[in-house]
Image 1 (tube, rainbow, N blue to C red):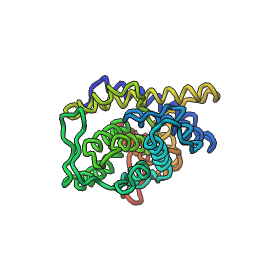
Image 2: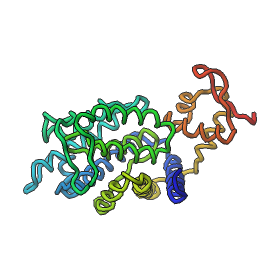
Image 3: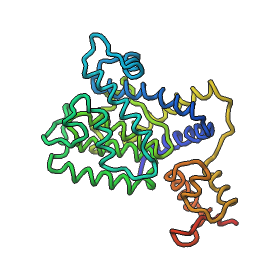
Image 4: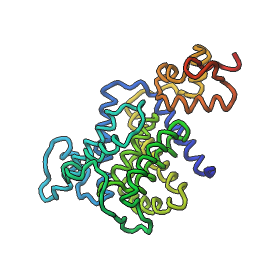
Length: 318
């Protein structure tokens, strides 16, 4: 059970997300401009948390113009270029296929290739220790097993947990394993954002000004997972508000959409559709659709009739 305070944050995030959904469908040009806008922000902030010396404007120049910055370490340049490539990869992935170890290793390989090609995308073979933490990460002999358990846990829970809880837990569980020789924090944040994207949520940026708090709540999460989920919920909410500000300044105010009601109306008008068909009809991901179908089922507003393969949902009132 999560606390009422965290429930309130999740509820508020859900409201903001519904407002963001009301601006859909977005044009391909708008989608691409948002993707590029946040590529710079996520790359800068995620690298800066780990000590990268590039400013946000320098990060933009490196990524968009392919230039080096005089006086800056070559590694910092490689980290910016690599993170941008890994970020782009998230958008190339099918969000209907399960998460795999190969996907996670590819994310690390893209980020780390220019830094150390030999170790990029490969699990570490030596022990490592996290400075400032009293907790040990996974022993070398346990990494492969724990990573298999991680992807199995994720795929089993993607349709069960709220997207915010799921993304925060995915980040935390991955970083506690620490499977790579370096770059684990950045991969963890990329995986968190991949999870949010797969579930129709906006990405979350962890700004450098929150670095100390971020490290503190991640350490506390060994004993109290809620403090970290709450921190991530705050970061998601701040990013939602930033995106909404951009939309409100440039787009006409849309008609508010209640997706739960929208899904219910779709079922009334199209009885017998299964979750994938409803996902296609409403323009939401399969997991978002499944999450809201569960809400409607729990409220006894809809019922699934027939066998799993050929059945579909109907409104109980009708």
